Image (cartoon, rainbow, N blue to C red; front, side):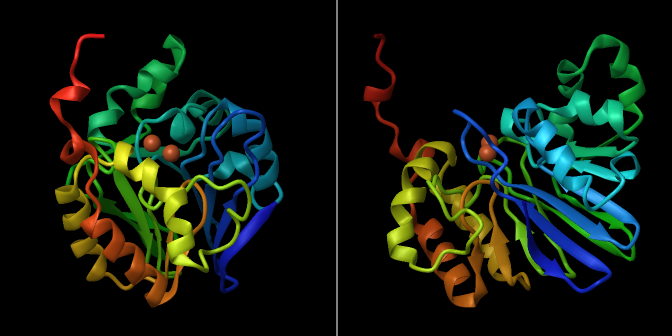
Length: 255
Ligand SMILES: [Fe+2]
Ligand SMILES: [Fe+2]
């Protein structure tokens, strides 16, 4: 079922939080609509393709989808590429670091016809034209992928933050965080391992503090809504030691 994150009649942001079945890690997928234009963010893998296409088919004509946008290259982000490519004419947007690997997700006969549909983002990001608005691709490299983008919607003021801020929750992924301290254990292990370093987290948080944001909505688990909760998350991630910060020689011993 779609969760309405924002709707002013012309512009909508929908989240799908309950489509992963079985052993897959819970993941959120997002549909942005501006008038007659639509963008699908981080649609996921084959695991969610059928359920997601049925759900978004309640809101749009899938064949007319404008964009398939991928924050990075992971299976839970874009492994369903071939299914979307064969059923839509959507442009595919991702980092230039991953654009050249996309053909590996497609049968050979599809590769060439798809290459003309790929918009490869430079490291600095871009404003992607979207209906009467834009979707801003914001750099978040090394958080966790080497070529990683987040997507900011200036109408709803939502930052779709990919794996940054992700939490592993049993239930409640459709609800914003209410008790930050109680939520930390759902995020801590993931960020310590999947985020590259405190330096990357801190620089990212500095950038985000300067943005006009009402919600940070990650690709797993619960969102952060309002200045107090967003501030708590940015303070936490700014001081977290993670990734290479935690490495010692013990991590590199021949087994
Ligand atoms: Fe990921
Ligand atoms: Fe993920």
